[in-house]
Each structure stands twice: as structure tokens, then as C-alpha cells.
Amino acid sequence: MPLSPPSDDRLPALTRTGLTAAPDPAFDRFAELVRRVLNVPVALVTIVEADRQVFPGACGLAAPWQQDRETPLSHSFCKFVVETAAPLIVTDARTDPRVAGNPAITDLGVVGYAGMPLTDDTGKVLGSLCAIDTAPRRWTDSDLAILADLAAACSDSLRFRIATQTARRRQIRVGAAFDRSQLLLRASVALADTSTPDDVVSVVRELVTGSLDPAYVGISLIDRAGRVALRSGGTLPPRVAERWTRYPASVATPSSLAVRRGVPVLLPDLAVVRAEAPDAFGTFADMGWQSAASVPLPGPAGPIGALTFVWKQPYDLGDPEQTLLSALAGYVSQALQRAEYLHAQKSAAEILQRALLSALPETAPFEVAARYEPAARGEHVGGDWYDAVRLDSSHLALVIGDVTGHDMQAAALMGRLRSKLRVLLVDRHEPPAALLRRLDAANQALGDRIAATVVLAYLQPEPGAAGHQLHWSNAGHPSPLLLAGGEVTVLDNRDPLLGVLRRTPRTSHYQHVPPGSTVLFYTDGLIETRADAWDDRVQDLCDLAAGLADLPLTDLLDRLYLELAGDNHEDDVALLAVRTPY
Image (cartoon, rainbow, N blue to C red; front, top):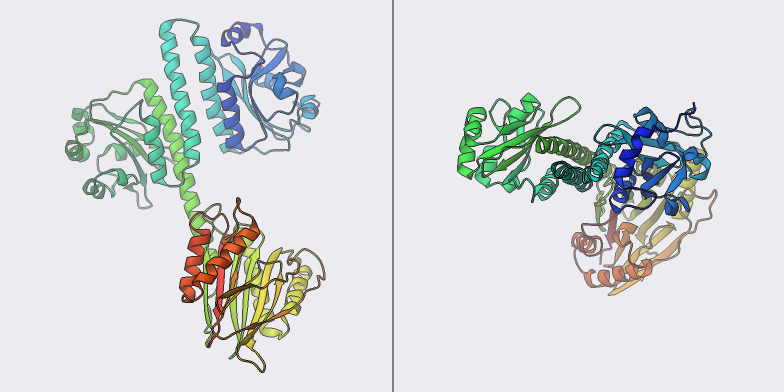
């Protein structure tokens, strides 16, 4: 239903903002933050005037809108926010009767839209902070909560601009609110990059240095038994940290009081500490602390812990500072819950991955070693695997592969592919190329379009010669290396990877392996980087392997992994090496 133009009583407040159809660095930062945190292509800080809407903050608009910074009200979704003084949440503008037919859908590509009101100090809605998607978007409760928090901070910035043109006393008060909003903005950005409680403590300490200047910042969480567990003991002397590592919630400390009461606990001097938190008084006296404030960390079913600040002088928090700490506790709680989720996800993923990699069989007279390392980033799991299957006393099958993807699904697909190949190895005594064709055909027939690279190799005695013969087929995988007599040979000849084309021709190849030689198989995570050419990295691997060829196999794999992949690799890594007897 069409809405009337915004009321004229807003116009004086709009004028006092000083904002117009021109970029403003502060509000551009708000827009960039919304786009980055909510992962949307476009974000705007919109002010609705009498006959147009302007964008002092804009990020991601196409030309000419990004340069012009304005549209007529015919293109405005924000006017709905202004008129109703309420958020406007649209999953698909093309089918939403409130906005269907708005020219912004075609001209600006607005499909998904979430807009939160921006208000002045009297509650008048001046515009909106909005996130825009060019495709339908179902906005989660978390998305909307984050956008609302940022809109509140953005509104503080608007109010600050208005207040600076009024009384000096009001200017100081609103200036402080602006500083607090900036601190919360920095907190939302910095805490988004944390992954452990120690990271969170470090970020919070850095954020409040120069404003609150506490002597200690503490984080405590409630464990499954209902006890208070200190998670910031690394910044305390060991004797103090050990005393408070874990204790019953009934013990009277600032943290336990905040958790039990569910409201901030303010202890402005030692007399109040002694009266309210007597069990912690000895530690306060020992550390030279004189005051504290502890704020509950909100969770889905009540406080999950407490954020505590301690000072070495009496400190009486004002209302604005209390509000700041409560808002900061909300950000901290989200960061801690995310860190716990990531840790649980990482652990589960690694357990799954390693469970899918069976132990190596007895391989005498061959020596075999393998190593798997999850990715250092992302979900810490992927589709890399290795395998060795003893076919008879002198015949060994070796496999290394990599299913496309770096997530739990890739690991699950890898498990299915590996199992099928093991069955074929035991059931079908055929050349490696034939088995890979069967594996690809089985995937196609069963509806498993699993894209993967694989090397399947047989190591067996060389007929009529000393040493052994490597009989292999390569489906798009990095080429194995032969380390023999001080030389490194790249065993090229690759066919297309599995799961891409039907009935792909595949070829088997032969290579003589002298006594005491090593064959090395690896996945691309060992050498692939964003900065270096693939061929250069292969050469680096060859040079390094040549110098380490005489090491025991386990040591060889360890050195290759540490020197080429290290602790910050983005992909998982699998290594498999076999050494023939002399």
C-alpha cells in the first residue's frame, strides 16, 4: 500500500545532521561494516528527505548510484522504515506486496532487504541502516540482532552530529556516547576475528585501554557441573590463577554474583568488595585491587559466565559506562559461544577425518609411512586420504586421493570413495587404470558424482630384474616422485580426474624402482600456495626431497610437511611414502 511522504516535523532534525548526498567517512565505515559482517553485496546509511533519499554511507552500489548518493522517493524502501518507525524485513522484494513494483528492484538490484531505523534524540526516525542482497535472503535472528546493534551505534553518530550544534553540556554527553559507540564498533569487528577465550580477553583489554584502564580483565564461564571456570588465568600470577581455576558458584566473587543475579555487580571500593564478595577479598588485598565491576554474559538460557573488570583504585561506574559494559558483554558472549562452536566443530571434523583413515597394514618387505594434517583454517577437514592394501606377500597397492572441497561433506564423500576403491582392490585383480574406470563407473551408476583426484599404484617384484616395478594410473592428481640413487624423478602422465566425464579413457604406466628407493605420494595441500607458481613449488619439493632421501620415512614426511606446508596451510595435507628393500 502506498505510503505518504515523511512528515515535515523531521526536517529540522535532518538539517542539523549536516548530511546530504555526499559520502561521509564515518557512515561509509558503518556501511562497510554491515556489508562485511552480514556478507551482503550492498549496505547503506540512508537519510529520507522531503523529496529524495540520500546515502551519506554507501558500500557496493553500482554506478551511477554510488557516485550520485541519492534516489527519488519512488525508489525508497527506507521510507517504509521512516513512516512506520519500525524495521522493514523483506525476503524477496519481487513478491512482497509492500514493495513489489518498486523501481529499485530493477534499477538498483534490490531483492533481499533488511532496514533498521536511525533516530534522533527525540525518537524521530531520520532514515535507516540497511543491508541489501541481490538475491532472495532469509534473514536470521542473529543477522537482525547484529544489524539492530549497528543501527543503534549509527543512531548515536547521528545524534552526536545534531548535539554538537546545541549546548556545550549536551555536546560533551553525546560525544561520550559517540566514543562508546565507536568502542562497540571496534569490539564487533575485533571480536569477530577471535577464536579462543584468550583471544577475547586480549581484544577486550586492548579496547578498554585508554578509557576504563582496568588493572585486570577477567572472563569466567559456567561449566556443565554449574561451577565457575576462570578462562583468563593466563594474565594472572600462577598462584592466583590456580586458586580460581574452578570453584562452586556459591562462592562469593564478583563473577559468581553476576552470574547468579543476572545483573551487573558494581563494587566501587574495598568496603563494598568485603561486604558483597568476601571470598574474593583476600585476592583483592593480595593483588592491590580496590574495586571491580562484573557483568553477566548473556546466553540462550541465562548467563553463561561473567566479564569482570578490576581497578587498583576506587572506581564508581556511571550509567553510560554501565551501559557500555553490558553491550560489550553481549559481544563477548557471542564471540565466546562462536569460539566454543568452532572448537567443537574442529574436534569433530578431525575425529571424523582420522577415523576414515585406517591404520597402515603390515607391509614387509616394504617400509611404508603416512601422515595426514588437517587444514589450519576453515573447517579443519577435507577430502584428502591415503591408503595401503596388502594384496599378497609381495604385492602392495598404494592409494592417495583428494575429493574436491574442504568441509565435512568432502570428508564424507572421501569415505565413500575410499571404501568403494578398497572393495575393488580386493575383488578385482586388474590394472590400476581398469580399476579407476570401474570406480568412476560405479560412482556414476550410484549417483555419486564425486569429483576427485586419485593415484592408484601397485608395487610388485620386477620380472627378471633386481628391484621392483611400480604400476600406476593417475586421475588428475599431483605426480608421485621416485627418489632413487640421489635423483628425483617426477612420475608424470595424468588422466582426467574422477567424476567429471563419462567413460574417460585411462592409462596405466610402469616404472622400474631400484632396490632401496622411495616413492613419494602427496596431495596438493603440501605445496600449493596463493603466491607461488605450481611448477616452482614442485621443484622446491624435488630439491628438498633429494636432500632428505636417506632419512627414515617418518622423518622424511615430517620434514617435508614442516618445511613446505608448515602450520598455516589452507588445505589439508596427506603424504604417503614407500621404500623398497635392498
